Image (cartoon, rainbow, N blue to C red; front, top):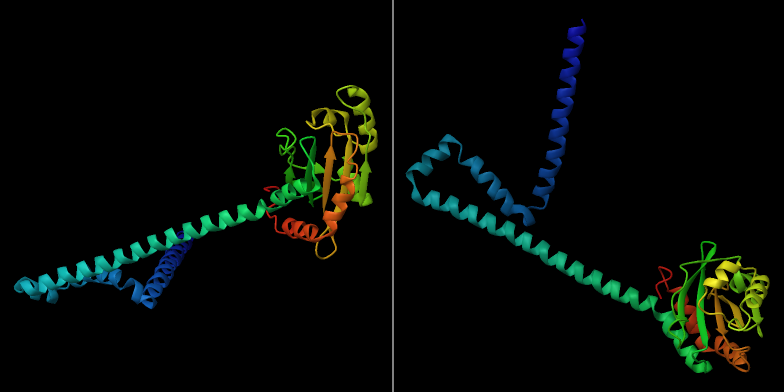
Length: 276
């Protein structure tokens, strides 16, 4: 009884495998037949070797050089048609590569727009190598630098990959909409006084401050809202001078005119984040 059980089980497994094989390759064959305009060359190349194995066909072939030549010609035509499709696929792949390269170029251009706009703002405000402008976009409970400019190479460096939402003057601005701080101590003259005062005012760790290449004495931070009125970024204008002076009003003016609207639109299209 046990032997019969195993025999039947083995038979069922074998039948299941057989029908699974038939189902799989039937669907492939059916698809090939439905798309015969693209696959007829392969079908010819596949069928001719099978057909010539029939005894009745072999009799004709043995006595007729014309039929043999016809068979060879059909095989050659099938081979050429198959290779034409291969070439067609290669051409499609080349076109796809070109499209992907164009997409990557467009994406890179879009991502760099905030930086270019910030550079124009920098020049219009009349800032110099002691100053810097940065756009921080809010994303996943942190801020990402998506655009920065300074005439000073060290100040213009990208900096950290992300900034906590509850740290520094950026975090304070996110909570209060606007922050302006000036007349902070000169770091080169009184480094510990600077670190202590900024750490307290900005709620930022002293170790983080010491690592920052730009020890600014004045910060202008303003929250930016998207076209739907939702807060999504912060602009920071900072300087190592004690104050922005009348340039502060210039920043307000620029953000309120068409330049500000253009900046908002450029931030909205800066996806993925942080590649400006």
